[in-house]
Image (cartoon, rainbow, N blue to C red):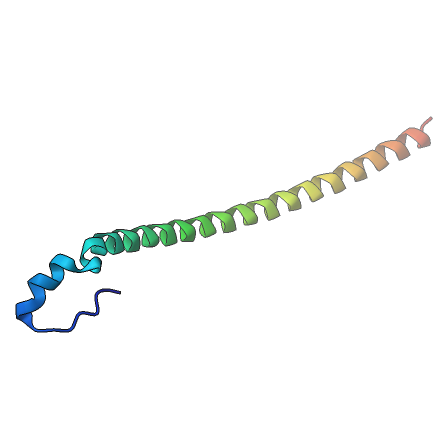
Length: 85
């Protein structure tokens, strides 16, 4: 991305003083740097998201196991209560 100027070297200084691209060339560099930073941030966010998804999966598994154990203990307590009452 840049100026498509084609000409002789002697006319370069004159061209640069009028060239619209010359006025905004710093923007392109700054914008490319900003885009790179955003891409790196997005990559890190995706990694963090994957870790959080794995954590959620593990926690759901633990909750399910606790619910099953709780249900079994409740049933055992009810059976014991009805058996000995």
